[in-house]
Each structure stands twice: as structure tokens, then as C-alpha cells.
Image (cartoon, rainbow, N blue to C red; front, side, top):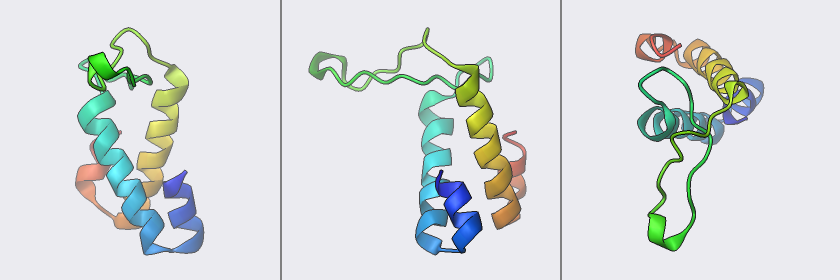
Length: 83
């Protein structure tokens, strides 16, 4: 969503949020088979662990769409290599 808002408004706050979101997803929710996992535990004893068996292809598609928009805005080739 933040990438779409950054594209529509040219607002740096939305751009920064899009970059932070992409970095978080890439670092914490992207698995070895290039699928975006979509669930984190909020239980106190699980320490924000990722549910590695829960994924959605819609989540991967949404992430790719956001990356395409982000790469177009920033003209950052390292972002382009992620999709």
C-alpha cells in the first residue's frame, strides 16, 4: 500500500514506508523457495517467530507488485533484482 501511495502522491513519508516494508519482508518473510510467508506469531513465548508453513501466493504477488512500483519510483537496480 505504501508503494502505491508513494507513487500517487510523491510523498517521501510513503516512500520511506515502502522501502522499510520491502526490507522487512525481504529480511523476515521471504523464504528460500522465493515465497513470501504471511504469518508472524504474536504470542509472548514465540518471540515473533515466522510460521514457515503458512504462506499465500497472493502475498507473493502483492509483494512483487509493490517491488515493481518501488523500483520504478527509486530507479534502484537492486530493488529490481528482487522481483
